[in-house]
Length: 502
Image: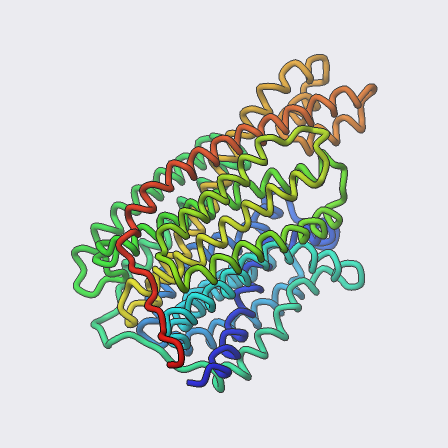
C-alpha cells in the first residue's frame, strides 16, 4: 500500500475516534434543553449522560474479539452503520426512556469502532516509525474529541435543537462508509473454534459493574449500591479470568499478559487516563466556578492548551525515531508530574494562565505517554490478536478514567466537605448540605442567601485546597510509576537507523 493511501486511510479512521470521544461530552450543554423538551426525572437525566459510556466500556473486549474473527474492517463498517442509525434515533427520540435506549445503543456501536480503528493502524503501517506517528495522530484525535465535544455542542445549540448534537455524527460516518472500502484493507485473525459467548457475558458484566460502581462513588460518595456494584464487578473479574483459563477458545488469550511490555503498557495507559480525567474534573470547575466563566467560555479557553500538547507530542514523536521507548515514556510521565506540581501551586486568585499551563502539561504528558504505549501494545502481540489487544487497552483506559473520577474526585470532595463545615453553620439544613457537597451547589446557595459572598469565598478556598490535595496525590502516583515503567520497558531496543541514501 502506498504511503499516501495509508495516510488517507488513517484520516478516515480518526473520524470515528473523534466522534466517539465527543459523544461522551457533547451533551454537557444540551441536557437543559433535553430536560425542557422530554421532562426526564433526575435518575433519567443521569442515565441519559451515563448510558453511552457504560455500554461502550462493557462492549470493548467482546467487540475486539469479534473483529479478530470476522474482520476488523467489516466490523468497523457494521459499527459505523449502527452508530449512524442510533444517532438518528437519538436525535428524534420522543421520550426520555427512548433517548436512554438509543444512547446505550450508541455505546455498543462505539465499542465496535474503537478496537477496529487501532488494530487497522498496524495493517496500514507495518513500518515501526510510521506506525508510531500514526498512533500519535490517532491518540490526538481520540483526546481532542473530549475537548471539542462541549464546544461543538454549544455552537450547535446556538442555532439548532438538541437533536443536532447527535446528527453531527452522520457526515463522518457516511464518509467512512464511502471511503473505507477504498482505503482500508481487511484484517482478521486465524480461524478459531466456537465463539466464547459466556466469556462475552462475563466480561460485559464485570466491566459494567466496576465502572458503574466507581463512577457512582465519584459522584454520590460511598453508599450501598455503588459499593455492591464495585465489589460484584471485581468478583466477576476473578470469575472471568478463571473461565478464560479453562475455555479452549477463550474470548481473550491470557498469555498476552505474559509479554512484559504489553502488560506494562496497559498499566501505564490506565494510570495516564486516571490522571487525565481526574485532573480534568477540577481544572474545568476551576475555570468555570472559581474564575466565573460560562461553560462555553471555559470550553473555548481549554483550547489554549493545544500548543503545549502539540510541542510535547512532536518532540516525543521525533525522539522516538532515535531513542529507546523507556526513557521517552519516563519523560512523558515527568511532564505529567510537572503538570500536577503546577496545579498544586494554584490559589483562588491565581488567574487563568497557571491553570492552563497545568492542564497543558498534564495533557502533553498523557499524550506523550499513550502514543508510545499504544505502539508497544500493537507491536507486542501477533497481528491475529490486535483487535483483542486494542480492546484490552481501551478497556483499561475506560477503567482508568472511572478510577480517576472515583479516587481523585473523592480526595478533592473530602477536603472540600471537611473545610466547608464551619462555613455552612447557620444555614438551613438543605442549603447547608447543598453548599457543603459541591462548589456548584455553594455558588447556587450563595446567590440565594444574605451575605452570600462570604460563603462563596469560603467555598472557592475549600475547592482550591481540594484541587491541591488531588494534585499532590496525582504527582506522587506518577512519580512512583516512573521507575517500574522504565524497568518494564528498558529491554525494548531503539529503532534501527536507516543508512543515508537508502
